[in-house]
Image 1 (cartoon, helix red, strand yellow):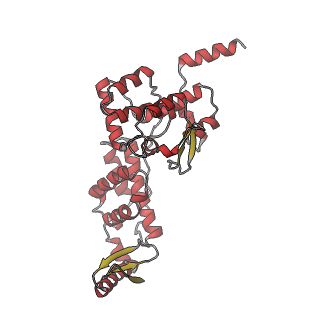
Image 2: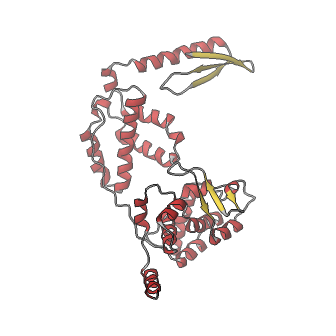
Length: 326
């Protein structure tokens, strides 16, 4: 139902309907506002009572566009998700809902596997399935073929790439952006994710307790992590005049600076996320328990930490030697 109110000499129309985003628009007259409201309410009614045959002919692009408008802004990784939605719209958007079946998504999966990594394909296909589930559960859309059953590619995410202090020194010396260089050092010192680092604020730091608060995390569970001596040195070198952000740099800009530095320093097969992997591995080498490391890294499933325990042969030999003397 539409409501109207006068603000600063103009009329604002507002439409609220369960299962639909709130619609608002401002007009010079109440008559224009009422006319627009009637048009919008008619469109909503048509969508709610759309015959099954018409829904079967609806292109997938309409669902992708609605997901982009209503759900994408709330996601932390909305930039990457936006690129995936754009690609899916170009490749699959023309399909009618009646055509979005298992064989169509399986064919897309196999075709994409020849172009990009299994992890990328898995994220794309999973995104299509997520949009379809939301359409069925929240938007009253009847899916003629239901939710397609499609096998997602297997992904071997485990990496054993270690990062040496020499590589970090080379990397930071070849980083054109001083902010990016400090962020790289901070990632290795704390094990924080890229998104957590670029969102870190000066107000999140508690110097008295030597902790940094991370309110927004991948697992949606805020956490406090200790500030090590290495991390403290990075904080002391950071520019506090650049606003509230500890490292005022965009996530993609940080990744780009990292890749360019690797190229200049001739460092092969190194990803920004490997810094987090290295930090967590070093926490284990220091003797921290799995629960202790999990409280720092933010892992909810302790089994996920098994892939981080790539203890170096040198460290293992030293530990065994120490134990043999007991």
